[in-house]
Length: 118
Image (cartoon, rainbow, N blue to C red; front, side):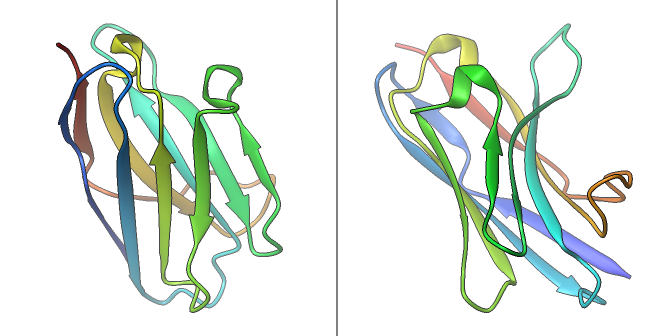
């Protein structure tokens, strides 16, 4: 069993920054991909950023240049640094994990609310 727990959400003004964290525990030896999704009200859940065990990253277009995904050296926590936040970034953010590049995101956190508003 794999458990993911997010933290770090909150209310921030436009142009501000937040860092989300996701702690993973349990049977994690086969986890090779970690990611961050978000879901805004009335919209589908979308992949914002992902990182693999080689440190290769990819980003959704609106996140490029503003968001950075990273992980600690022990491979049990990963982060989403979000800078220059915009109101359209408001959403529930979920961390997710999977074992293979073409597999489903099988493991999910509970979500953390990010609200960007003045």
